[in-house]
Every structure is written in C-alpha cells, then in structure tokens.
Length: 192
Image 1 (tube, rainbow, N blue to C red):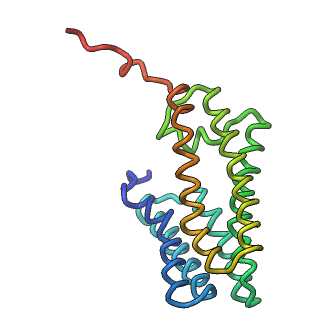
Image 2: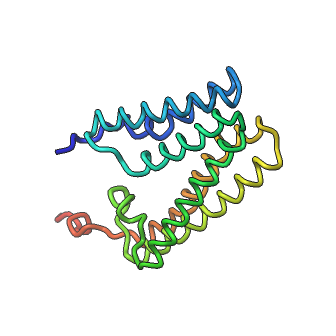
C-alpha cells in the first residue's frame, strides 16, 4: 500500500537535480555539474521511494539516462555526452507518445489523468501535440549544444527548456478547456 503523495515531493524530484546541476556548474564546471546531477538524481529517486513506497517511471527512466550519459561524460572526460542527454530524453518521450498513438493509446492520459479529465479525442490531440513538442525540443537541444558555448547550453538546459515547456503547456489550455469532461456531480446546479 502506497503512502499518499507529499505535495512538496514532486517539485523536489523533478527540479532538485536541475538545481544541483546549475549550482555546481556555476561553482565549478560541467564535469562537477555532471557529478552533482548524478548524485542528486539518485537521492531524488531514493527520496521518492522512501516517501511514497513506489518509484514513478519517468524519474527512473531519466535517472538511468543521467547515469549512463553522466557516467560516459566523467569516464571519457567528454562533455558531449551530458549535452546529448536532453536530446535523448526528449526523443524518447516523443517516440513513446507516438508509439502509443500508433496503438491508439494516448499515453498522456494515464500520466496526467489525475490533473485533467478529458475526452478521448482531447487526450489524443494533447498527446500528439506533446509528442511533436518533445521531438522539436530534441532537435533544438542538438542545435543549441552543437552551435553555442557551454555557458549558453547550460542556461538553455536549465531555463530555456523549462520556459519553452511552460509556454507550450500554457498554449494547451484552450484545448484542455474545450475537451474537458465535467464529472456529473460538478455539472449539477445547486437548488435555489
């Protein structure tokens, strides 16, 4: 039986490793930041398990990719691997979402159903849009890390990706509103 989720846990698991990466980069270098994100990611996954008694799939997938690409970065002393990690994560998300759509299963639904109640068509459209967004973000990361300085890439990774994701999600509000399913108990008007 899993414990109820602590409201503070998700932001720590999702953003704690990024904060550690950014702080370590500005206090040291990209290799220090790589080690910091690896340690922070492991701590985040352990904390998630300790509090909820389960490990959400997305942090685990991200942790595995961080360990592989971070490990290669440190072992080979080559920063290209950590710079490719966001490309791989974004491309993997896109492939999984597109794969679900090919099987007629909008995979955002089981992930986001607790936040939004949408029609099946709404979930399909939203999943398609997010799959395209993740594919575009993978390409954008490749362009940024291959054509800019490490400082620019780090700022893009920390702030740019986060801002673009926030803006993209905000633009989905009309779709979410249009395809929202209102539970019957909320649909009834109170008696005068």
